[in-house]
Every structure is written in structure tokens, then in C-alpha cells.
Image 1 (cartoon, helix red, strand yellow):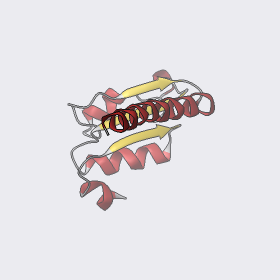
Image 2 (cartoon, rainbow, N blue to C red):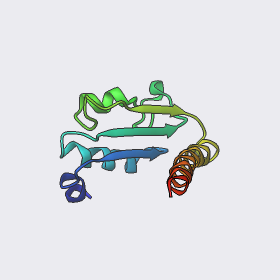
Image 3 (tube, helix red, strand yellow):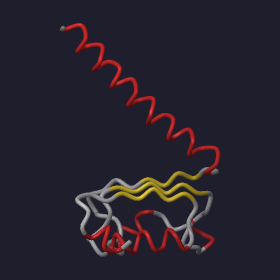
Length: 108
């Protein structure tokens, strides 16, 4: 995983939950001076002292996320919110592509 991240043009993190997978994914991005964007989605709070509860600014301070990035932490239950985030992303892209196709067909 480390070599994939190091040689990537851009790198982003979407972490659902946390723990060991969050630790390794963030550490891999540290090898390339940080991820270009990040989204953390979990219910963990900072006061419980877990890796899952750490805020994105903690990862920025360690070089796991670039200082120029705009990291986001969503405090929510993942099985409810993640499908909504994905659906919204696809709907936005679908609408944009549909408009592009309609514009092209009108010009012909």
C-alpha cells in the first residue's frame, strides 16, 4: 500500500470507522507528505482517546494530510450516512453529464 501511495499523482482518504485501517492508510500517505483530501466518517469522539476519535487536524500535524487540504470529519453513523454521500455524488455527476449530452445533441 505504501508504494501505491508514494507513486500516485494525487491521494485521497475516505475512512469509514477507524482503528487499524485508519492508522495504516494515514501512515501510507505520510510517505508522500500527506493526502490531498480526506473524509473521516465515524461516531468516535476526541475525548475517548482512540485513533478513530482523532480529528483531521491531528493527522495534518503528523504530515498524514497536507496542510493545503480541506479535511472533513463527519460525526455520524456510517451505514446511514455513507450511502447518502455516495448517492449525492453520483446524482450530481449524472445531472452534469446529462446536461452536457443534451447540449451536444442540441448543437447537432
